[in-house]
Length: 203
Image 1 (cartoon, rainbow, N blue to C red):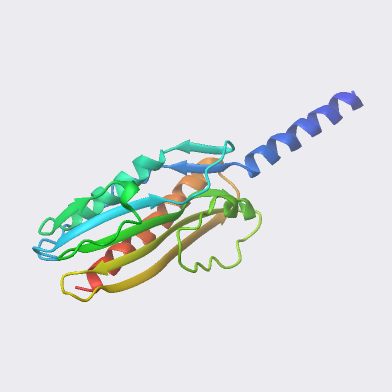
Image 2 (image 1 turned 90 degrees about the vertical axis):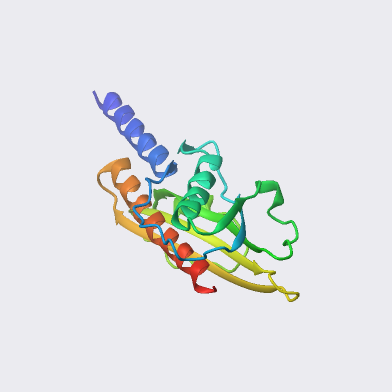
């Protein structure tokens, strides 16, 4: 009986460790945004995205890297119907900005959930200088982050603006993956809203 109890205890501990070390990724829901019909009207904008996250075998991925990039890009296109937006392939992320156009580079440094400090293992280097602060232990931590570079080449002078967007939502470590999923969507919603504001603010 004692041996069985010990084996059961080891099994429970192992399962807890496996869950704690797992990274979770779900596709964000469609953004509930009202299209800005007059914003960025007539502007010719190139959008190029890259995923810098560190995705490993311990990551439970229900949203591929390409799916995530497509969702971010399509939301921008939908939000600014009056703009002329061209979505470039990821392999052009570091290509030179095109003259007479505006180039927006969006590097995804984070979009995932995990328990405690484990969330930091999947945060990638998309450039910039992110400050995630202290990550609460014994909580679900969901992070969403973008490194955004806007290059305005509409004149002979190239103007560049950058911003690091980092949003963290922490919730008590109860409710399992459903809690993590809800927190991740909250983190993404706020980070994506800030992304759109930044794109709008310079024009």
